Image: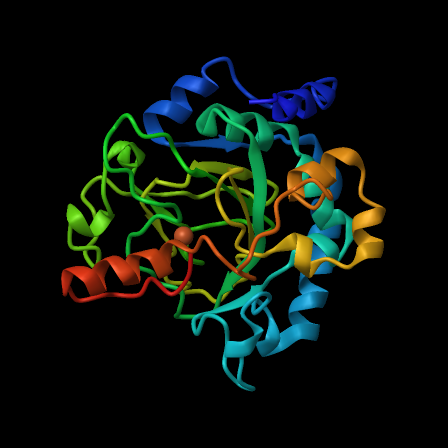
Length: 300
Ligand SMILES: [Fe+2]
């Protein structure tokens, strides 16, 4: 490990950081941590919300298809029960700023214990009476407890999240289990130990990619826009191939930390596929090989 991740984190460490003393223990025990007072979020929440709202309006059904454009058909949403946005890093500088929030990078390094890479940044807003998902995780199953974790997803809340607008369900501690959730439970059922994450706009929930979770139905129809920032071990594919997808002017204007985190430096390896690393794709293959019934979780 050449420790570039650690150097980047150190370069950001003069900033005010909202992590309690027991953050490592909480992350290890529960598989997620709630960050309520990120300085970046305090300063940029309004702008993030405004830019996201404008993009949702502008993109309509085309929202969220970045890297998977060949599957798009007019009138076909990326996810039937939610408004989606994809490829956010180059759509406004306020989104790009999310990739260097120190609290997120510190937690990512703690879980991954290796060099890290930004693998995707998408937004999801469940529609009225829709948005229910089955329990799933966004990572890859581990075959043994000694195997390292693939990464993290940071849920960045642009609106308040309440039971009435579909606060996410999570099952604390499940990141430690090996295999897919489907190997342990009927993923269509409610889990006896699941809890709902009711948080205020501006909150960040950093979760281990192996934590079982699910979107819940938005009964009130009130907006619940959440940006999902996906960070993985550098060995894994990106959900969006940034080296290929981002134009050269944009890449040229990035600072060295951003270039490294997005893996778009000349020296970074070329990813062959445009969109990779989807847990749902892997799960589908696993079920095909086992001749088991596959239930889609709509997104990951
Ligand atoms: Fe998910």
